[in-house]
Image 1 (tube, rainbow, N blue to C red):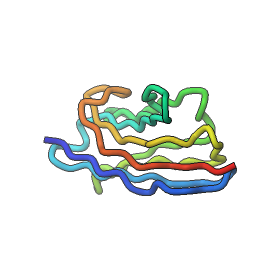
Image 2: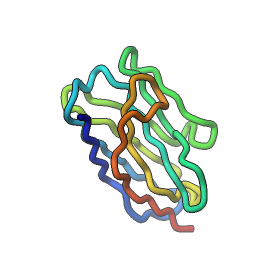
Image 3: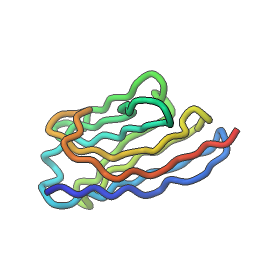
Length: 118
């Protein structure tokens, strides 16, 4: 069974940066696509970044493109989300997800809260 543990959330001022980390365990990390998704109060969960296991190709929606960067370290079983130029609308619980394809959550972490103050 895959386990995912997120860390790195917190309170940041608008324009600031945060780096989220996700520790993967339980299966072979290199065979899973990894994603970050977020859910703001009253809104549906949305994927904000994905990275494929096969070629490290990435996906970002327009709302975060150019500001967020996903990366993975296969030697450490870790995936990261670097978030720059944060906006108040980025405030949400951020979840790490693992799936057989990008933007698919076969397994989910418990989430870490990111709050961006204006």
